[in-house]
Image (cartoon, rainbow, N blue to C red; front, side, top):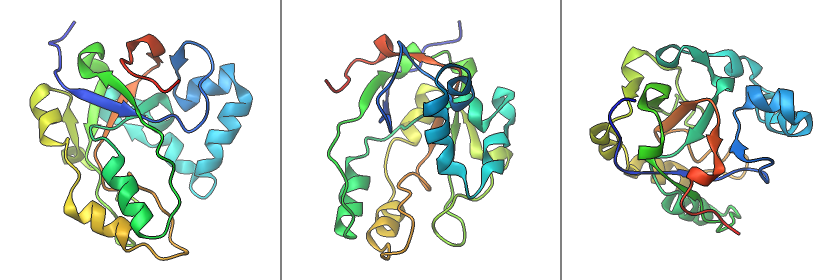
Length: 182
């Protein structure tokens, strides 16, 4: 197995998890059709996103589990300052050392011209998951906080649009997380 990565990652499931693993959308389709349909509804305006290739992992967007290198508290506080109602649910904590770095990649996210959707990636937007790269992206930028604080009432409130993502190809066992909400 490749060299271990030091650091922590965060995951906040949008719905209760079934089974013993966090599954990517493509695996939900086969095991839990209702959860697949629910999570797929997030892409109703742009279903093509689900088939966008993630070349470094030799898969597509629907084949990965999304993790964050940053704790979401500052993002959610900024959303509250914009007038949004956001729950204080603590994210799950995953030691990065549990992941196989050859199945993971860091995707840098750049807010698009409308400020609400990420620009399409290019080759320079993908970084290998290493201790050094994880340390380089584990801070929330001032721009991200300011974007969330200035959201208007009709604007989508996508807190992760300009926060790097850690994409993991495949499923993740729940017992790899060191802290999960009760």
